[in-house]
Length: 188
Image (tube, rainbow, N blue to C red; front, side, top):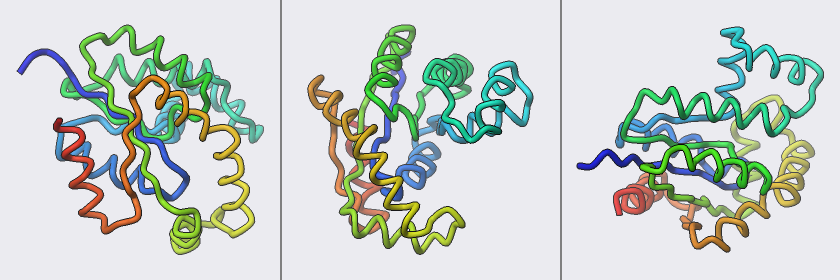
């Protein structure tokens, strides 16, 4: 095998199974699962310079600025322990972030990037999220998160589609079927 590595970008509505599939596939393919939420929490807990910057936004309940998120992603990719590659889960969430990410990935020309959207009908997502039982998974909050997704994140799908990078996987099937489809896509 050459020195190339695989980069997977998971997109999809909240509850589409991105995190679950990223966990499964990262283990099977020896890829790092890079979750922006996890990076933020870890950086804050470790009191890294970037984490300290992010903490002030988090404490105020504000979104972490794009550039700071990109710096965190850059740091995670530069310090990736798995030479076989990575899976990005939860980033990019806006077209601006996608453009920033494209520029960042120019530092990693040996990485072949695969963008995947896990498609699940909205009614199935709402049911899944309500069943998770998290405190912030109330019907009103879920609908608000979906509204924000359609407004801010859905254009990212068009961005990657226009570049011919979008792969759509039906996420409304049994877990194993979805994983099998993703494994075939990643292996090709």
